[in-house]
Structure formats: C-alpha cells, structure tokens
Image (cartoon, rainbow, N blue to C red; front, side, top):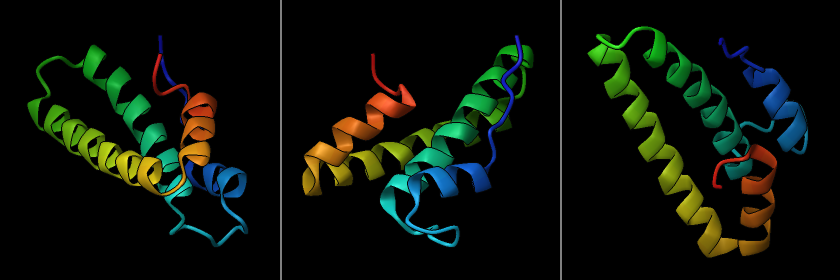
Length: 89
C-alpha cells in the first residue's frame, strides 16, 4: 500500500485564501498532514529508518502545536479542519 502525496500546492489552493497564502494555520496543518501521511507509509516500508522516524515525530509535534493553537483561537475552524483531513477518529 503506497500513499500518493497530494502536494503542497494543492493543499495551499484548497485551504488558503489565495495561491500564495502559505502562512495560514489551516494551510500549515494541511501541508504537514500530507507529509506525515507520506512518511508514515515510508516508515512502514522501511522500519530501520530511525532518522526518518525521528523527523516524522518532529512533524507530528509541530502539527499538534498548530492544532492546539487553532483550537484555542477558532474552535469551529478546528473541528471543520480535523474532519476534512481525517486527523482524529
């Protein structure tokens, strides 16, 4: 099973206000989620890649902090985003 990356540009266009809107919290979370999903599949195929796993954990932590910030500032947008990205079950 392989994960096909959607790409940063597609995420920016979908979650940003314009194609250059890369700083918005929702855009950053979406881009990180795409990278996390890709690296998760990579980690399954390459279990001895400890450096990749460490990078993955760093990305997960960064996304968690951004999600916490979004939940504090705009709970409605937070709920919508996690539903769209399928982050929590």
